[in-house]
Every structure is written in C-alpha cells, then in structure tokens.
Length: 424
Image 1 (cartoon, rainbow, N blue to C red):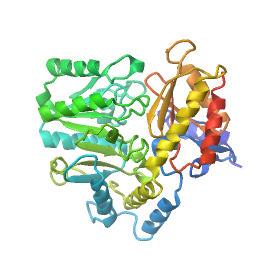
Image 2: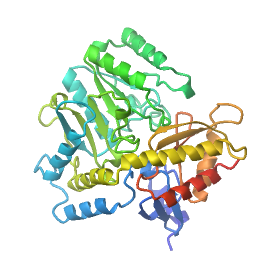
Image 3: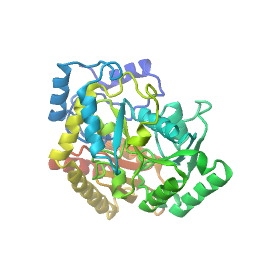
C-alpha cells in the first residue's frame, strides 16, 4: 500500500521547496466536505481547496456537466474556434454583475491571470499606469501580482525587481490599529508625494482579505474609494477570487456594501474545482484593449466553462447564499462558546460574512498574535481528522472555508474537532 510517508519522500525529491504544502498527507478520494488520504484516513475539509470548493468535492451536477462536455470536445482555444459554453457563461455572469449598466466578461485560467488582465484593461481604458493596492492584500504570485500583493514574506523575497507604478496604503482593521480615516489619509499623502490621482488607472482591493487575515473592507472605506474613483476617473476593482460565488452569503462579497465596482476579478469557486478565472466589468472598459490584447491558450477552457455553468445552477437551486449564512452563524456561535471556556487557547476578533469566517489566536491576557500556537492548533486539527488553514499577516488567523454543501452532521463533526484542536 502507498503511504503518506513514502509519497512525502518522493515529493521532497521531485518538487521544489518553493511550492509549500500545508499537510504531510496525500489525498486519495473526496466527496462533498470529506477527504480520504492514501492510507484510508478520513478528514472533514474546512479548507475547501483554499476556497475553491464552495459547491463541494465532485458535486454531481458539476461532474455530469464536465463529463457531457468531454464527450464533445475538450479544447479548441477560444481565440481559434469559439464555443457556446464560454459565451453562455459570460452572459450569465454579465446578468449578475454587481454594478448597473452593460457588462462583459473575459475568461482566463488562474486568479493571478485575472488580476493581471484587470490591470491591463484598466490601463487601456484610462491611459494611465498607476495601481493602488492595500497592505495585507494577496493578488497572486506572478510578477505583476506579486507587486500588487501587500506582503513581502514569503511572496516577494529573493525575486528581484518587480513592476513599477504599484503603490500600497494601509488596510483598515482594528487588529492592526488602522482606521478608515488613517487609510484615506495615507492615500491622500500618496497622491501628494508619489503619484497624482490623474496617473492612477485603478484601485484594487478584496472586499474580504483572504491571505491577509479574513479582514472585511469597511463599507465606509469602499464608499470613500468609490467617490475618489468617480472624482478622478479611476477604476475600482473588486478582487473576488476568494470571496466570490456565495462564500460570503452574496454572489460577490462587495455586494454587502452596496458599492458598485468597475471591474470584478473571479477564480477559485467559479468552476467547482476546475481551473477557470475571469474579469467581469463595465462593457465600456472591457472593450478598451484592442483585438488580441487579451486572451490565453487555455483561458475559458470548455470543460471549466461547463463546470461553471453547473456551479451557478447549484448556487441558485441549493440556495447556497442562504446556506452560507446558516453555516457562518453556527461557526460563530461555536467560536463564542469556545471563548467562554478557560481550557481552550485564547481566541479574539471572530469575524466574517456568510461562511467566510476567521478568528485570531492570541497570547493569554493580551491581543498579541500567537503564530506558534496557531501552527500547533492546525497540526492538532489534522491529527484529529480536520483540514484547517491559517492565514494573516502575523500567521495567527484560523480561517474556515468549509464547502457550502456540507451536511449538518459533517459540519457539526468538524466543529467538534475544531474545538478539540483548540485545547489549551
């Protein structure tokens, strides 16, 4: 029988260390919110492939759609010979755009590609070079998206010079001691000292920061950014790669604020485990690049588009936005129960929209981040049969991304294991 240890040895010999793996176990099969490793051990999945599996592992509707498409064709390159699933998916997303007016959508393969192309579109539409992002934001590992990401370690170190005209301002969060007014003040300083607003193409942020620690962008901030963008002709880009597709209780996370973006980047749960990303935006901006300026060999792969069409149906038919809110309430209630106990590690700042929930592990009697204990809790969870991920600029945030299709019984089982992993 193949063992986790044997596969780990092969992985260390064959795969570079730069590709980190959160667990030393190897998947064999999965179903909805459960995974079995190659040794037959069962895990409740609170990671969801890092927010890719809002519709769960191998949802029957998604698998059936992919199987049907695979019987017809798997690839032509949309730029060579187009196909209906790409067009149909664009139409459905355009109809659900979180902004008013005509919309268009272009498809790519990864979240980083979506962000890269959103910047290209914004620059083509405005004729300007500058991009403003926020500390703690994560936008990808390509050169442009590394520059946009607001965290040096481990994403930027040793990779040399990054593209210019990318600027960062502090992201407001009580944990970090930064207010909305301080963020906006830093933005005004940036405009005065480094680059004028008339040279900014786009302001980019996540409505809920993912890798940055599941920090919610305050509505006050989003409203102020919208006003600034309108005043200076800047495009507002909502990075929905992790927050999108019902995770927060809305199709897109920015919908909680009522603020309309100009462009939306999408990936992860868009296609239920198949590689697909996209940029959804106001038609007048999406049409700014000339023919051939956008695209990619695998962008909008027909199998992935078929999967995404099924994902949208599942979100509607199974009411996953409502389900996200129910799941989130249960998670937050369990965290509140744990916080009342004195035999569990200290937790602080539980937060989130829908089922995108994060909570800090802090040192006893303080609000000081405790990264070391967080790592121990994640490992203890794995030993107890729970896939649990950490994140945050200080590495002390536990994030829960359980599939929204999880059964009540498996959710309760996972929460029991979560509580056990937090034993002091």
